Image (tube, rainbow, N blue to C red; front, side, top):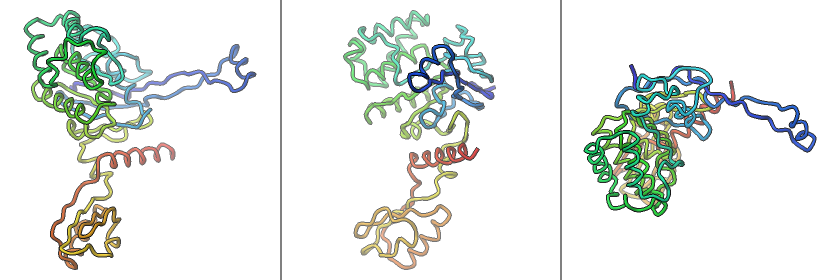
Length: 330
């Protein structure tokens, strides 16, 4: 049995259809019209214990709504889910003590109190033994490098420091499942890297099961080997991260450094994205890379060559574009 299971999970909202103009507004006072908005349209997946899985999709795809259903914050319109062998929206104490939800744009710490005071309150809420609390807090503050900041009011901390404190609060009771919704949103590269390293180290030590949404592909590449891609509320890809690149990355980047100036006819092999003296970068269709290299090496003296996969951001954009085209066609 998986640690997280979703079966045909759906969420539809009934919203008021506002009428335009004064006459429409007056009619709306007595006779309201509604329309249904499908936030999640039948998502199914299973996440095994100890997996770190990325949950990707464009804005409005249904990622946050799915996480809210898996955490029990909202009820689905239909479908089933089990997390830690519990139905999340039953909100049983045994379930709530074993998972955490971290949302990058929501605060769980008291603004005017030092983070350390909020941590003590969490200890009381979750009935964490003193020895375990001290050990976990020391471990997390060391991983994130914030030992000296826990006595400072939360409102005085930078965005990156606050996010680190939010993550500590979420992990103090040693959850078995961690749901992360944009945990590094708005953070600089250094803060992102710190949180990535903390999550990676904590996962290695504790074996926590993680479901992560993020628009930063560095988070995904650093932490996850498996990817779920959702679009318009439906799952469009479930598989290894490398498989996304293999399936949707149509080209590879061939980087060349010639002994002399780069030839003028490189555009006959692919799309030249950069050409500067003896160096050149060419986008080549994946299936043609071997043949293109053989042809270039036969005609020119090459000092160095490398072949790179396309950036993950580019590949994921391609996934979204194909999913959008399929949705429009349907």
